[in-house]
Image 1: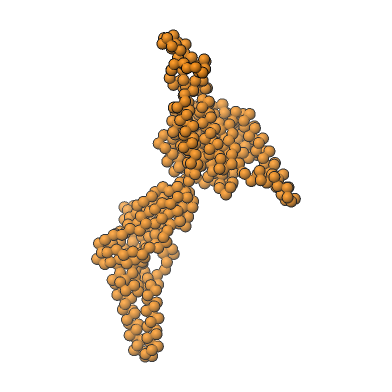
Image 2: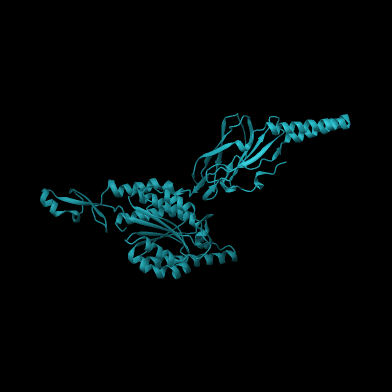
Length: 454
């Protein structure tokens, strides 16, 4: 009996793309066991040594014939196609094509192996491939983790025409699928784009915000602000002309993800890092539509990801980089993060820092370095608030509940103190629960854009 495919060592693929063939051990099926049972019953009926010899000879001959007539696994050619990028929580498919160039019909059980977190279905598939023909097997993937999912190997059990025995072997058929962040906040994008269109198209501003760009001149109508009148144009045209302004375009935004230990904490069953990724994707998509440039930096005690110009061609590059990120269980180096930001951006831009408003970490690590950063860039801190704090603060039913309420109030007080300190330093803060962080951050961006403060 052949060992299962899981216990065989993996074999690397050759550089020339040819599949490495492995030995093909014998595989007996359930029919062989049934034949053995039937033979035992016949032997008991005849009760003779001759009957035993005949029964054994027939079974061995049948098994030998199946082994001889079974299609050879080593001759099969395999290739893959299908999805290479799947959002987490969605379903994709990978198609395995099996070509049988031999002269025998392939009757096989095929197992296309993936790691458990890939959610591959079905686990096994039966197929028949005519001599010189081909067949396909579609494997449905429903991943449960972000990152790269690599196909392990294809195990094939080629059964003879009698169904008693066959050959078994496996081949490496390379394929990789990148599981992307789910981008659940995409549902808010249409509403935010509507607000953006109002800022930059349908309603031109008559009052110039700090840094807003001149758009056009038009005739004065009743109700326009007199401060928008262009007196030189009025003198030339003979009619009262007013200036209109539009929100700034082609600005730079740097999304900075703190991937230290606080990012691993779960709020609402989801890691803070994943919630920050979702908010970052919404902001990046919105900024790209607004004509702004989006960059990404992810760091803790080392730089984990850096993407330059992600907003120019959509957010695919940003999603690819975020897919490979995981929170590291160590304290972040605020000096490294600030230094990396300053190295990336020489000119003034908007820096959006996704981090936790942990009092000790912010006051000891971030705040001492803020003056240098704030003097060169516009800063916005986005943090995930835990909705359980409010529930715990209301508890009074038992001594344990009172203790939890006191701890929750202390945590909320520290968080409010940190927020107030940051705002006194000129840093905008968005502190929202997981469900509202992404739209709240988008609203803060739109407000800055409308006021010309990017």
